[in-house]
Amino acid sequence: MEGRIIDVKNKKLYIEYNNSLEDRPTLVFLHDSLGSVQLWRELPAKLAEITQCNTLVYDRLGYGKSYPMPTHERPVNYMELEADILNDLLTELNINKAILFGHSDGGTIALIMAAKYPERVNAVICEAGHIFVEEVTLKGVYDAWEAYKTTNLPERLQKYHGDKVETLFRAWTETWTRDDYRSWNIEYLLKNITSPLLFIQGEADEYGTLDQVEKTVTQVSGNTEKYIIPKVGHTPHKEVPELVLEKTKEFIGIYF
Image (tube, rainbow, N blue to C red; front, top):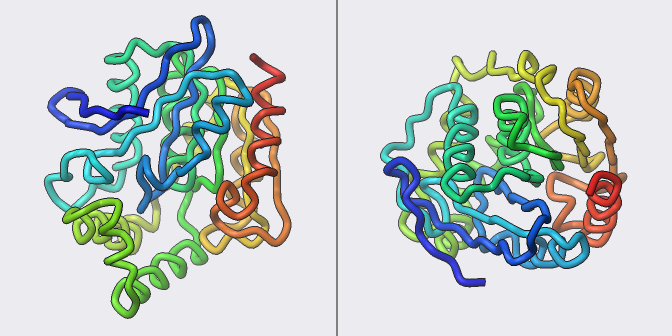
């Protein structure tokens, strides 16, 4: 799909947008803390085909082919701010019927977006999202930082993010491990989510426990479903893609 840069309130974001299906919702893909449009690989196209939905895939500021973030320093509420940017992007593209598919940080941003802008979000698929900070999450971040220093991880990331790698990696690791971030929590927002929610989580997720799932599905106001996959880690859509595709198709089919 042909991609382009779009200016959203002075933030230049790379998007790939297909809106060829009239009167069908748009699947909006929200990548993780080191992700990008490219790293979704075939998932958006496959999901669009089996659900007959339009698709929007984009790189957040500082990632992939979007313009760099101005600094690696982030406020505690950076994901809440990302939800505001997403709302601006959907406004710019006149997307009013969105199904959000978010992974990790992207899953969290999807939940926040659904809570803050419920009139625009018709459903949420949250894969391995976080609503509060856990020790296992911090261990995962520290392990990633060690891998960054001792393996070829920087070079692998450079393939997708170019010269933005150092900034985005520091933005992720330094924010999550700061003392003031320990108390970050979005549970207070969950009651405002009225759209249907599917929460997908690998039982062996190295970045979060099943508490993330349970405390989300019990506090939102809309219909919920959880899909816990045994022996799977933090990235079910890459580890068991067929299971994720089938479950997501089934979930979307109930409502659209």
